[in-house]
Length: 191
Image (cartoon, rainbow, N blue to C red):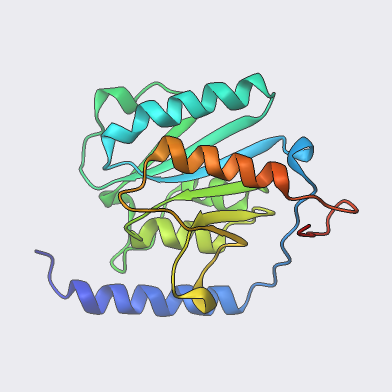
């Protein structure tokens, strides 16, 4: 057990709130045909989810959509299945500061990338991943429904029965993204 974990997380959350308040953001989505790249935030501790992410990556490649996955893995060594994959990067505990804020070049690049859509697969609300999602420069963010709507970083929330199947979750996201239309580029309109 880590010393003062709860207090450190509270301070990390306070720092995140300050950064969010200082950042102006307007969601933008121009329809499924306008998607060229998708970013995925993933709790990589759930190694059993990786095959579903691989299938999703292949499905999006068929649509000519690039996918980049950034995971958080809390152990010092990554599992072999996570290494040498171009579309997957993982941050580990040693890449977090004292307040659980990610500190790595990979994290900074991911946050600053303007993904057309960011998909959050962080069902346990792991703080380092929540931090990345909340500060992401992605145009449109999708995540699992949370009752904390006011503090949610998502533009679209999916409500699903637990336990959530990653395959089903990703399938539902694509289905809803196909249903959302935009009258003009850069303006979100639900019809």
